[in-house]
Picture 1 (tube, rainbow, N blue to C red):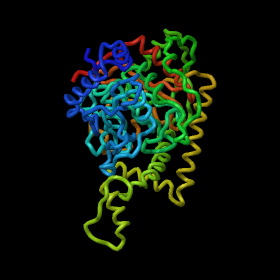
Picture 2: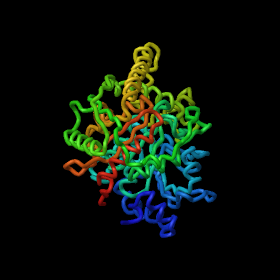
Picture 3: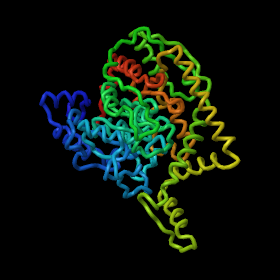
Picture 4: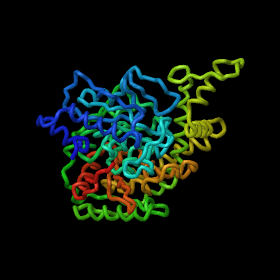
Length: 478
């Protein structure tokens, strides 16, 4: 097996034993990028040399891809949008500082849906990313570049951001592990915001142990983020015990209704049987407000996005455009022309939707009502976790769809995240891991959710499942 195809924990072990060097690992990853990325387009910006800290302890010198909405000092950071072309942040995101301190080697910025608006990584200014398992299919979104880079071995592991499933859905489509930590567990300082009350940075990795390792590196309180939780961070690798005997796991009936692909349903049922044999107990439950999750999410997320994106007007960051015809208000004309040329169609659509729901006369009818429904959805989970240790569902109702298949139907695209959105609205952690393949050879994902700040329980269940199946060992052939 090639160096770039190994997991991070295996590479760390080889380097500690002096059987490999950090330089040889980075070279193997860079050669894969040079060989495959013209076809996959997993990167928005590729670094020819590793971005690293010379003063680090070099304990984890593992090549990592960073989603293009997480700031790297003096490095192009664009959210894969034309409007941020040329922008280089004057500081690192907190997660980037933590990774550099640990010895990480950053390979570049991974491609993404523009400002994380999408479920397919087709709305990027740099063109779509392709799924390494089938180049005619999408990798999922919006962290599609991060997921594809790991699946194609163009990075050992990656960071993404998850606002409504943007880590877990691409992880499912690309056959890797993706974790959305509890809201507040990982600092969002330096993450260019989509929807501030929903966004969360998290790891995309080749297996569950790597996910636990990477969360160890990035989790923790940060005084630069007012929403960061000031709670102790456990060693998540200690949760990988393989013991799930007598754990109670709920299966929400609302996630197995019309619309789910029969192949996906079959693989989830098979996964349940694997966990039952290891001692877990399953029971059907109800999360009655699930049907309102997508509508609630798209009111709240677009409202926050329209506010967050107001800052991009040509005056402070990146692109600045002027209209050809001169008018009487040059500054206003510059704002309008910059936003007209800088934003793509999906960004404009979400800005208009969000502005409408926040506007006078409609705030109570849409935004305020959506906030009340969000509380009801959270209450559903709070009640479920009084009895159950975890909830298990499919990650996505389908496998990866074809490029362009849903591009002209935004509502159909939004429904791709129907099983992942609720975790963001409730602020709970959730992880997707491979649980099989369709007859077309496309990966299928299994989602595990727990109560807030109980990522250890997720890793305990996920690692047990992974150690009793071989799905995570299947490799992409390019």
